[in-house]
Image (cartoon, helix red, strand yellow):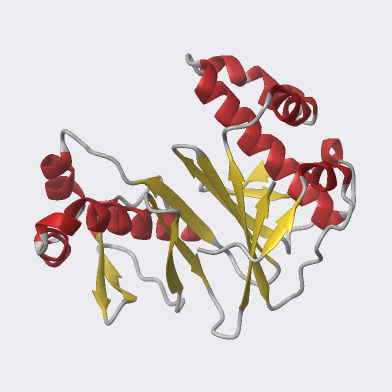
Length: 246
């Protein structure tokens, strides 16, 4: 996924030169989790009391920083779109656990991070789900394939040995992003969903015990050579905007 807009961190936190988001647009923001102390402290300063109290839940400093950056940048972007201070952002959760911003319930968002990258998606007219994974060796790869994928999916993942890891992580992000979009992550498990990839298009075949009448669109994307992700949204006419914080 190539970023066609770059925004300075000073503009992000200062809400200068901030892009607006229209009804038919969907924005994907990419942020590096490798940041200096000044950036991290700025993110920490705009977290609320509950978010700051959760930092110590994580044992390792890098994981703590990843959390601080992800939550701080989320608040900064939401504040920019709503033109309010970051500490005025009020976040809550739907009954099934999906977060939303109470200041403006017509602004939908989702986020994910893996390795050294974080991605955020925002829309004015559709629920969104996004998931990102760094492609990496997994000692329990075969066990994960057996537990989380259907026979058709497994055949696709294993078809080309050199592509197995990339295909595994692609299918993983497809399922996770869908679960995040529909807010059913606690009730549905990946093995109850089935997808196929035909002519590079991702198609949803169905879910056990769950009827979804919505026609979701699935877009896979890559960051550099070792990250794969999937974005889920609605609306064929949606215009995609890619940004990166520098």
